[in-house]
Length: 341
Image 1 (spheres, rainbow, N blue to C red):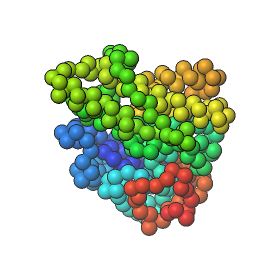
Image 2: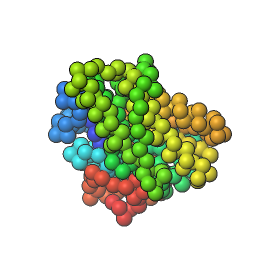
Image 3: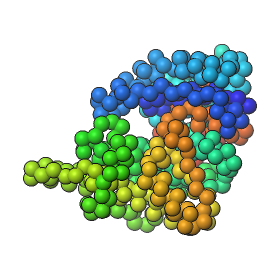
Image 4: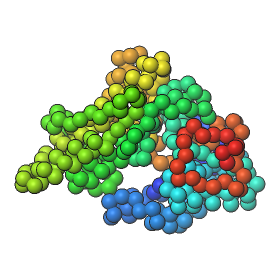
């Protein structure tokens, strides 16, 4: 089954053709990073307008790269939640028009489910059940993937997501957008024990995260130093901060794995590209005899190939949508089924 998938939840306009959930025939991404860098972050109105300009072109290019016409695909898939509502509406509206015109089934895909599915492309023999740490700019979840379309949230952030915490700390240190990527690069050359930073936890919820206090601690360090006319080592502060965030993520994820008896641990989302997080979890899994899976770096960020992968399993589960499908800025990852569309 060959699925044409669209993704427009934030600032990447993407289209891909994926076969049987595992084979990528094409994967086109039009990024807006350079434009949003001028503002230090994503401007929703600008993102929506750029999606309108790019969506038809990336779709044509994805079909061309796959050597197919629209009539030859078996279904149309689209990210419908969660994300920036204006950005989502562009993709959803365009996908509904394509599905109606081509008389193809329309498959709605939850953005976070797509991130998890990126691992099916990178590791074709990966099958549920497994435990997944989904970490991105807006989300930090520990998810028990029971099967392809049945998921249970074990833990989540109570405030800032890990990616958001990285980006905001990086901006406070004067790094350009997207800050998390730059902070990871700079941290490689720093001393991760130079600064003592807190490791926040949530009482009574051992799998939940809280990063707002840690982010504030770094900002206060920078402000205090500035008021005293002092200069802090950015590489050392970056390394210390990265270590604190990663230790929080790894600690809770490993605890959840031991408590649930999971044998396969998976990471997904934009922060899954973080080099220290990858090294730390690889070491933990080796020490505990667990299998560790992570997406290729090219599939960590937003893309349509991951949406096409998950769409295959949503289709098999009967999760289809009519032309009444609407975008939704916020939605639980566990929500699934025709009644939700």
